[in-house]
Length: 71
Image (cartoon, rainbow, N blue to C red):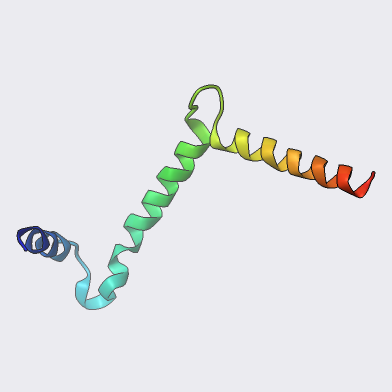
């Protein structure tokens, strides 16, 4: 219960409760999404980024689909 009281108190510090209600947290989610997107594009883990892996897997799937079709 101590943690929930702290969380409630922290949430009441965010301005705009009367005007926006729950939607006052949207800017935080937009910033979090932008930071996550930046991380996936720019940060290399090993030798690859998330998008390198995505493009490679997509091209592999397209190649496999062409082979199954017989092209």
